Length: 402
View 1 (cartoon, helix red, strand yellow):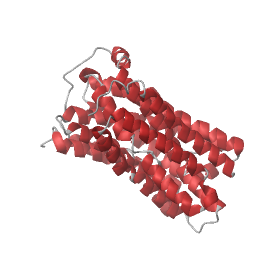
View 2 (cartoon, rainbow, N blue to C red):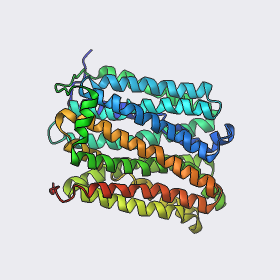
View 3 (spheres, rainbow, N blue to C red):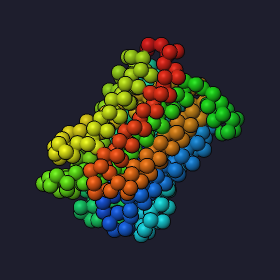
View 4 (cartoon, rainbow, N blue to C red):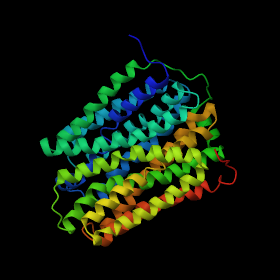
């Protein structure tokens, strides 16, 4: 069988595999209203279940992504896809309460840790030249397509066959991604860097790359906090404003909002490449933080205003994503790209882990059926983005326009 070794074909294949591998990424957040009722979960417990996947991601990513400096990243990605399949099918058949939700979401987090950044490293190893940055930006932006389709799939199957079937569907899709990886030719990294520990230690000494990695952590705080509560917030806003909208329509809107992260991320990456990258990313993050705070106060203006602001926020929260990751990859030494991405992944998962927990606590404290509760929760999500400009200020003076 002829295999794809590098270039456009490899990049498109890996992007497709990523979309399929992310099929379970949004299943739990998209089903929060139904699962909270079926499993008797409080908002704080929902926050913990959302958080545990990022905790598992944070624990697994430094090891899995660092391995890609020494072995073919395709093999690591395949292992991640197997974990995602097990998490989806396990949730479908065995999810019955808070503890089991923690277990299966934790496994899902390990699956994503073995899929997303290892896939980016596999793409980086198989592309070069001036177009490499654009392929990296596309791959990063495609994450939005995967998460959007995950939410759409969950909502569609929920209406047709229930929440257990939605989890089952999320476990089947990664199997197709595994078949795609068989088409990809092996590529063992030529550069090695001793042990994983030494690689990460060296990566931490890269000042510019670490500034972008910290910005990525702030980005993930805001992004995953928003994604955790998007559907639940829209359901609450519809009830509060007595809007004539059904559950399927809300799921469709959430899907479209998440999917538009793709063009938003690509646009942000192109703008950052033409401006001073750190300044552009900082501007994006300030703007998204402001809009996120406004979204929590928008119910007073009616459900239409909520939808408009949620739509705009969903785009703006993603506009810095590819620009940050491309900045990290470009700033990292060639032999340390895997270790550098491992550090970035850890910081991103740390932000993604804390945001749902903090916002869920605020909802339980102030009331998940109250406007002040949602205003405070969304403000806490948006405020996390402000760490990004602070981190990037460390390198702004030394970065040349490019």
